[in-house]
Amino acid sequence: MQPLAGYSRTQIVLHWSAFALVSQQYLFKDAISSAWERASEGVEVAFDPLVLGHVVGGALVLGLAIWRLVLRARRGVPPQSGSSSQKTLAKVVHLGLYALMFLMPISGSVAWFGGVEAAASGHNVMKVILLAFIALHVAGALYHQFVLRDGILTRMRRPQD
Image (cartoon, rainbow, N blue to C red; front, side):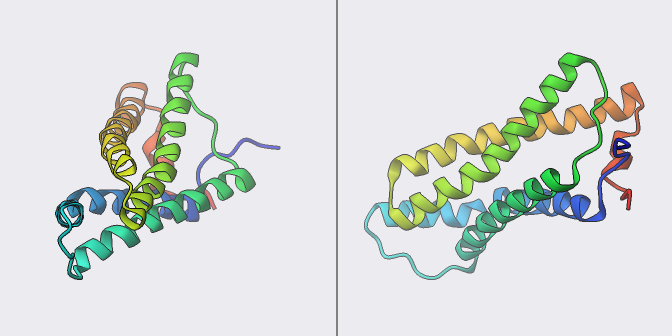
């Protein structure tokens, strides 16, 4: 079987959709943070569409991560380029990103719906770790594109099928 040259249209759409959802989770997190503080103090929290958006956005991130992994298992992905240490780092970063796309919605749900302070604390710690993994992911993509010049960004813009 020939190795894949690129990603499918669905894989690309899911990648950029996950990016957009995670971005909006960071941009509009203040509403849920404020609501969590009020609820922790025993104050009743009124309906806020931004809070609902954060909760639904988290569920969608989890759903997209599941869908992406199913597609990855069924279709596969293009082979990685670079040295063995670069490939190992890429695997670690991707594993971390997927793990966090699972753990953050779960911890956020346990915190929000279960009122579990430890889950909220873990969610906040993972928020910082996720940003670090995203920075590594972007840095790696730019390194491949502009230093190695292997066209890696093209694979995430133009579908193979």
